[in-house]
Image 1 (cartoon, rainbow, N blue to C red):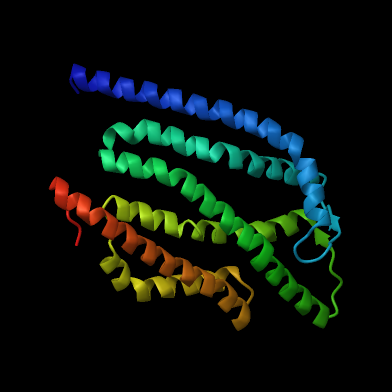
Image 2: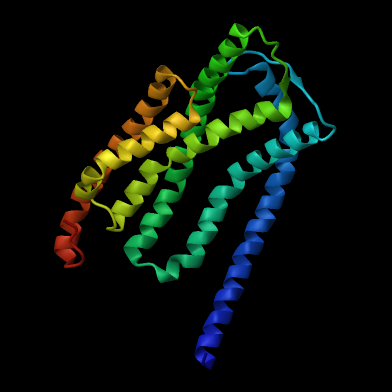
Length: 251
């Protein structure tokens, strides 16, 4: 490694340390705010459950503290995640083409919006449906339902987090189309494989009955088709630019 490479590596490490410190400071402040807001958030979730009111029980001295910290962490991520993505963009933008820089910056708020919409759909639609299904099974078996708070939130997060991530599909597809890695023809050719993957995912995160599978799989397939339509719109919009500038032309 020559002197110039060593200086370049040192400057990159210094820049990375600067970005990490900025993220850590914002995350610490957001975590403090999350700790203050966590009791009110828990009280709201308990009184306004999307399924039915439940009695949360603790079966370990650490259950309450664990859930309290978990809710505070989720609340802090809502604030810190967009800032983290922005800091990541600042770190890598010099290595991107101008079109890639603009695309990445524009899709940061769009990806955050998709994630929030996915959380809302999972919490208010899929989670109540799953909880109602398990309650029906327990009732038919004449079992007494006593919910532990740790098990309740674990069950909820196992449903809403994968589905919220699936709602990132439009943002990812649009970004990859914007920088030329995807195009509508490729998305059309991948449709059958995408459908199969989405059906498998919906079967894993929904109750084991056909209606529940359809209620999850149909919106996810609609997301994919919506992504294809948006990708086609963006692809057609970009073609005149590439023709005029003489840059890439994606078929």
